[in-house]
Picture 1 (cartoon, rainbow, N blue to C red):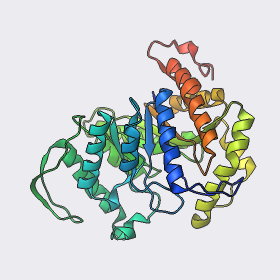
Picture 2: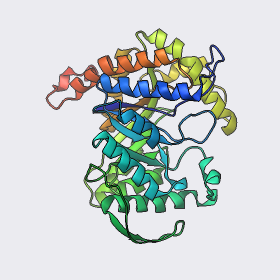
Picture 3: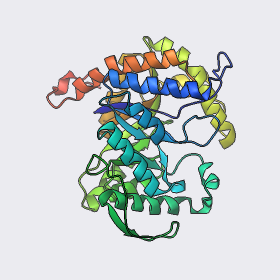
Length: 354
């Protein structure tokens, strides 16, 4: 299994101090986080796109290009590229450029986006939300498959036998589709034969198994090989379980409450947060051993090939985020890889008797 991280570049007040770091400092901290993730042997680092004052990254490819110059092996992805409000030609060019700079480590994680600010900002009608994504995803796939393209659609000027450059190092630039809980999206992704990143940030993981099933069944029906699956969740690792909970609750609650006020959600309570840390909860908050066991537990449900976790849910002090990355890379990831290695015995897993 590939293990990695994702972030949105949170730019909000620290709930303990009330201070907000400067945008330039937050970006420098983010590059240090990617660099450390690479040094401790993690597989993927992904950066989200937002157009809001509470997140610092609106141009993931630019941030990832800076990270490419500081890293050696870690794969660099968006999380997500809001494709419906972007130009697929420019997206492809940006990530092909990143691929060249990184020596073939770029990926695109395309999604419809959980916030809508980018659509009026770039002049798109929200009533076309799903149609925009479907059409632009189709164009992005065409761009990946050949350097010259003729194409026409409803939401972009046609392309008449034009070359699109530069071309990436990788023969086919990896394109994942992020799905947040819509069965139709899982089916569409599978029918296209594309890997799916399934976000689980609340509720019991077993409830989401149907999305993995729909994804694989649609791919099989369309004649594609079984596509890869990533589970993307929130979490935080500290030396002890209590430390992890105490350090992460306030930032988690501040973030979720801020979003919740706009969406009609109740405020997060400490008992709710503690329930989310249990084996069948959504959040991977705990000691290294707890996080190891939870990753392996969910692997029994989903059989996924990738797991990405966001540690900076809300503003977390940089030193604490760095310690969490260190523990994830040096303790959690090696243990998970040993347990899931092809030659690992069936009885070697700590969950084998569960």
